[in-house]
Length: 218
Length: 250
Image 1 (tube, one colour):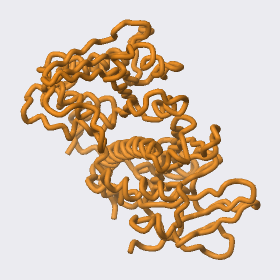
Image 2 (cartoon, each protein chain N blue to C red):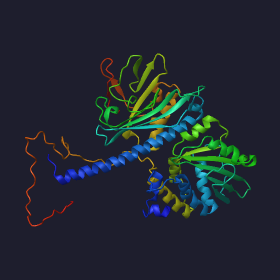
Image 3 (cartoon, each protein chain N blue to C red):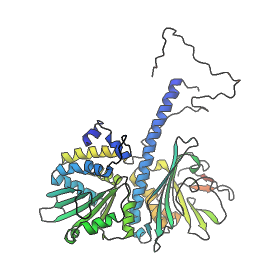
Image 4 (cartoon, rainbow over the protein chains, first blue to last red):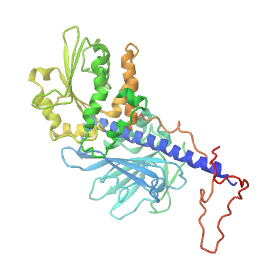
């Protein structure tokens, strides 16, 4: 089907306007998540074990042309009591396109939530597919939903994902991000922490490929 | 100025997003935002202004509410009150029962918090007697700044209340202004002003209308592959009369 100059022109303008509105919602979501995670860290259950050790770190990434933002990463440094220095980061990555969503059979934006040793910078540190498999740790998938990097010398890191379009109000943020984050920080198993969420279900492809397939919504 | 921003008669709010006029070196962004947002509350009746401060202080607090019940009967706002240290605002509230509360308010926009700034406001600005009935309210872009102050040394014993600007927007959205028409107008204009500063409520993705795009390899520009290819055919001009082209948008 060929498009007339007028219809393609209108599509271009509509697409840019759409991206602007989308960007606004992504930024508002990132701000809301920062606020709610900061408040969660203050609650007695988490404050007993963790405290923030710095300010939120925000990173963004673009497409290859450098025109369009395709992802935003927010990372909060935390210390595990009784230590006072940063031991890990609570990380949340919103990926609209690019390697942050390129698991097999997935074509939609994802939000990845985790606890990692380093903050997201979209240079060395980001959630992406296929996952880099570097010797020194095992990458396991628990309950088909929680990635866990098991290190010999360092604390474990973990991460799970939800579809961006399943998050549409502050209550969705609480159910799918804040509550499971709290449970996982306190050591809960994936099956328990993610039971009430619409966390993405993955299945590994092959042996040690680092690639995963996304299963359809239940 | 809130009216000017609300009706798009002024774009001066862009100063708070970093815009500077030529030659303009220093803009007191936080002080101007303090005056813009909190200033009009000083002109409202105490019960109206008090309704906002109550909502701001008591949002998400379960037990041990900071303020006594009932409408505020006395309210005084003192901007940039000078003692040994200078917070942005001091709010004194009173009730018919004789109870009083003091709220020391620090607003932050894009500038960082000074070393021990919050600690000094709490320990040096207030007298011991004032501290007995006081709360310290910090409003900033994120909570992490206030959390760091708490982590550094907690001297507040539960009296430090942290709110992000997004929090403020959410509280405004839920504020019951039915008995206070002036407060309602103020709420509408402050919500609009915060939106102009990119502080907006998250409304979700399902409400975005999708855009239908034709599927093509090139959107509109078909690059030439080499110099021996013919250029794209241009449309033939059928109307030879005008010497200029009129752009017609459908």
